[in-house]
Image 1 (spheres, rainbow over the protein chains, first blue to last red):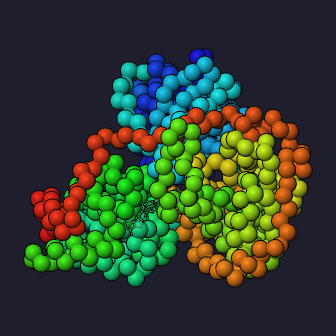
Image 2 (image 1 turned 45 degrees about the horizontal axis):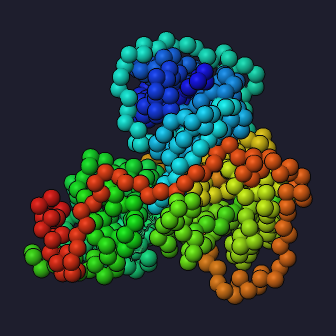
Length: 326
Length: 263
Ligand SMILES: Cc1cc2nc3c(=O)[nH]c(=O)nc-3n(C[C@H](O)[C@H](O)[C@H](O)COP(=O)(O)OP(=O)(O)OC[C@H]3O[C@@H](n4cnc5c(N)ncnc54)[C@H](O)[C@@H]3O)c2cc1C
């Protein structure tokens, strides 16, 4: 296959995101001995630091260094990439909030195929890439075939590929700024500022025991059984996103990619299905207990101990027992 | 402000156990409870609130079969002014780009200033809004959790980024936004509301009405084809505790104690 493979790398404060080497691994799963070119946009010393850091892992590193992208505005970066990417390219990015912003439109502008949130690749058949995705909040997986002949833009689920730590590629850093800047840049969406998330009344990132509640709690009034259990075991209450969306608990208690990253010793997932965005906020391999009434809930694939039960009945009984033993 | 909101009818994952059929060609669709995609419902609520604040109209559109009528009517009961169903046999098997092409054709028949989609739907792809914007050459922002109308030419939007931080942008109209859950509190729709719109006429547009050639959409036009569904085996999975509730709780308390789960 003569198609060039690119990995768009996001970074913060001069450090490449963990997904960088995962994208490299993903690329090699598409084409086993792939030469992969990294693309890094930003401005000043930060970009140089990231370029130099990833250079040993990639065949080549394309640098875009300009104040226009000192904050990664996906509209501007899409315009730049459309200019510099060769026809028929295979472009990989992480399925994070930047990748979700950048890539669907990029595939249209490059006139390529598009696949998002891929968790695995199973090779190329003819001109078709075989990939694995998930649907229905991870309850089922699918195989998809995707035409590669005109190129493709792909986002890869963070954490799905084991980072490729091999460092033999010795890539050259190539400055693509002039090509990327040729002509007018898209100016219809202008970045203003980042507003930091509010700090809450408890800091769940420091908790050793988290009693975490999801949509299975059904009603705000039922939350009491969760705080009772948390109190009994000496832990803190955390939750999945729908609980915060419903304004039943404050945002600072949300575990996940768009919430807090926690690293407790013990994590109890009560009425939580186990979406990858939720699990993405749980680090340090805590001992995980899942209680769910759906035998097929994805949370049972990652938990250490699972119980099939209705939390509304089960949790109060558990609390009673814990209190009894005290 | 004329607002178009794109919605999809999906199996409700919080109400259903999704299972793969015996051949792996689809999920078991009998007895599934369907509803409007969660993200889309927030998008419709947001559109209604904008209209109520500054005037204009809200149109809800869906690509689907006649059963999608039910979700369009539900969103009209919420307060949308109009509904349009885009339906044709040749639309079947469309990939994300196909759906975006169909929607683009409908957008070009109207005079919209703002298009909202959900951030993602049941397939988790999150692709249609971004593709539609690129096809129209309109600016786009994804995962929007705040909208403030500045004037008739521009709006201010917040995007939810990692860690729950919010990226603020100013964006020119017309534009396409994909809406994240939590942006508002979608209103409740009662039976009475649904009854009120039950007989409102709902225009149905086919490929022909939209000027789309059949080979550009549907399976014929798709670059991405779904081959099968399966249930993956991940690692070892959890040790499932069994027995009576009492026995399970006894075991669990022992385990929790040994793992430091009870202080
Ligand atoms: C960009 C983006 C970022 C996101 N960030 C986050 C994030 O940071 N954190 C997060 O959590 N989510 C996040 N999400 C949302 C995520 O995709 C899921 O929608 C969410 O995690 C689902 O929460 P849940 O498991 O509580 O609800 P559901 O998926 O609805 O699961 C509820 C579970 O409860 C079970 N249940 C129901 N009733 C009972 C009962 N009585 N007893 C026992 N079990 C019961 C059901 O079987 C089901 O498994 C994000 C999504 C996007 C698109």
